Amino acid sequence: MHSEQLQLSSQRWMTAALAAFAQGTESYDFAVHHAGIAAEHLLKAYLSSLHPALIIEARDFDSLLHATGHGAHTSIPASRAKTIGLVEAHTRVHKILRNQMPVNKQALEPVANARNGVAHSGVHESAEVQTVFTTCLRLIDPLLTELKIDPNTYWGSYLPLHDRLIEERVRAARIRLEGKLARARAIFEQRYGHLEPKEREVVLATITRQLSVIAMDHSLPKPCPACSSDGWLIGSLHLEDRPETVVMFTPYIFECTACGLDE
Image (tube, rainbow, N blue to C red; front, side, top):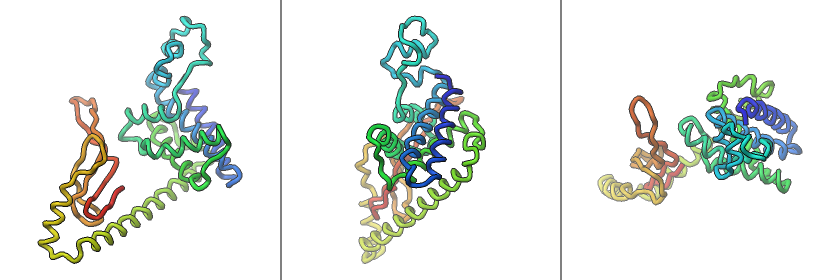
């Protein structure tokens, strides 16, 4: 349950994951499985650095006794303490490091599915391997900062591979975004290109006032990068304790009802 032990475990699993990834397609099952474990252990390392009880299953009292230093009151050894899994560990860390964590619950799902698929039935989605693997790297990077772990130490000789995978992910994301913007602009022109300027202004004023049907805490108007109409940033509100309490808005989705752009 010690943070330092989990950090070392995470590094060992990630080194094995990177080695498997570098070997090619025959070892991709090991790569996604080991990367998922590495991510889980580093998430737990961060939680444990705050308090060991934060990685314990909430309803298991014997495990909580061990985590809080009162293991003498239970007959169950510490090695049998029940801890949370990858998804719950991510959920807890995301609540604490909301602004620093680039991987949300939706992005984590393929990672959990791949790791569990290999562990339980020896199968995974081959087409998603690089996405799954890169998601683990993106999840781990901010945790290294929070835990004050030197990236050169954690990634070791595989740091160039880490950097290349992140660069490829950024490039692919930019290409995907440019494609979505181009499609949205074409749709906007098809819908409203035939209207006179004043008529178009009236129509868009009506359409863009419609709030998204996506249920989240809060929505804010924001000009659409594709058509410049008013779109909506949709996300959640949370409180941050500073010298004074501050309400923070974290956007997750952008949606434009005029051209159909969503991201």
